[in-house]
Image 1: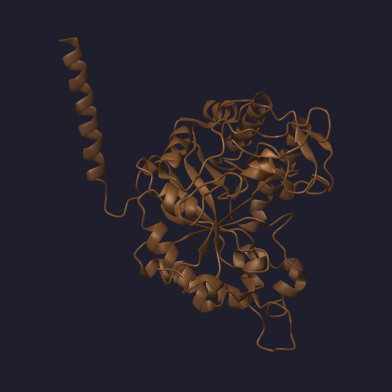
Image 2: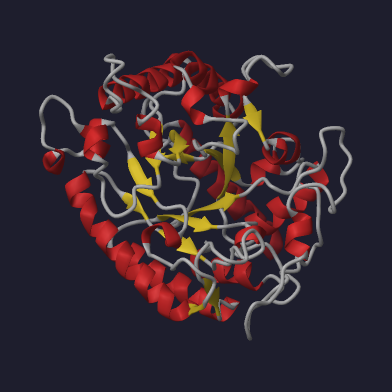
Length: 414
């Protein structure tokens, strides 16, 4: 009888909650689905198979480079060995395992690095598809049976890819085609990442975007930020016309402040020192991709203690959070679990963070959480799920198992 009453009580509570939501006033915002903290983790799509569906870790993705990693000094953890071994991320079954591990450990969204180029338009079955390295999201994540267990977003990595794909070729028509593709294939999904109910379009390099638009005078090589502003409004209108309301424009790669080179921001005679680029371009929020973009990590591969570097990065985050008053938009702090790009370039690429074991990473999580609470913030970006080639990954490894994921779960999980 007691068990029956307990079940009946649960059903009454569920019905009451459903009724209150159903009776909410028209136009009221939907209930927040993320909990106290909203954790978005970057996903690097560099680990897939061949276009024909075959997979060989010796020739597909960057697995061979990771396996060939060499320690350069005492205490240098190389090679990094994934606990699950080299896998084809474009396989939905492989992605289901990743989604399950993320969802069970406090991660709300995968933020997929996403590469789109005008040179690819018209070369695929879908004429709007200009994507490259998109097997992880299109074939893996979106085809996984449990993909709605977490949200996802695209991070438009608007930089050149070698000499074959160049961002300078992104014309207005190509940009609008890109937005149509994003809206139709990603915004349309019920689990697309939102902030305040708005689908997030994440622009990696704001200055690079502005530089797409030149002046009308062919002798003037400066960028015209006025054209960039018009283009962003056209992108927003595309989203409105598709029925998704307002788009949330998030940017990274803003470095020390919100100013750009004077040649890029000169508008109407306004002096650059008094010109707020983020406000002018209607940016909704900023974040960072990795600590190294905001806090120098040097130019050569020498060991840098993670705990000491964490404190430096958090000081930088303080200044970014404080600057939001001047910027007029919120800044969402970044959390980085490491850095080691020696498998890509053994002689450059910056210092190597050492002693970044799960215990020290958990301390970094706790310190960042305190800053979130003190600044009434709840959104963070994390670098990253699987940047094995840059030594920053939450995905389980042979040495530490699930330790990094458990740290996220224990500190930010609801």
